[in-house]
Length: 216
Image 1 (cartoon, rainbow, N blue to C red):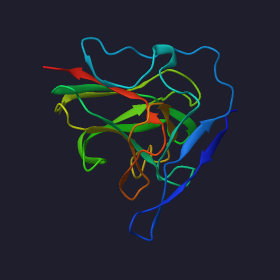
Image 2: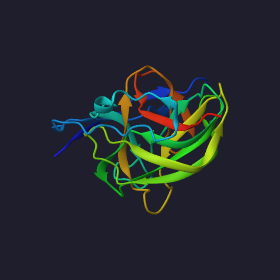
Image 3: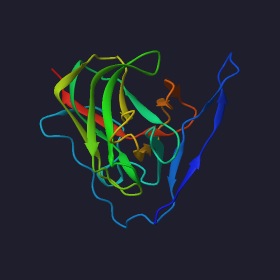
Image 4: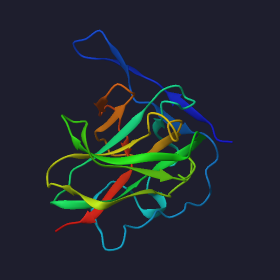
């Protein structure tokens, strides 16, 4: 049976006496499968707008990632994660792949959305949520969750956007417990523990994902 260890940190908000928990990490300590399932290829006829995924049999880390937890989950806290991307050309995003996994608690489903940027954190909802179900088990590689935005999401070259994984505030899926698995370049992420989005770049872990679409 797999086990996870939760690492919890604390930071002081500059200029205030309030404290905020830093993003929580899940680490897998059980036996991983001896063979990886190759990650899905880019959807046919679509181009890569953004990707930080590795090769198909090692697309992301299968042993650690940012914790995802709905407000009704067994962990007793809420944590959502945002992954930024900046298109090199004016594009339309139709498909997002993300290394999202299920950690054996709550409904096996999570929401994926695309947001604009607001001062380095997710701002306005542009598309979604798309509910992704039947996520692979945490500790396996390299099945990717796929969110389809059938109408396409127009994005502008040189402008930052966010892929967000979260849950409903109530009802089915609000008890989800899972992980957004890491890839390793140092980069900015964002997290939300129920009181608004915060950005963080102190730790060299990047949520693994990709965006595909058309580039006119």
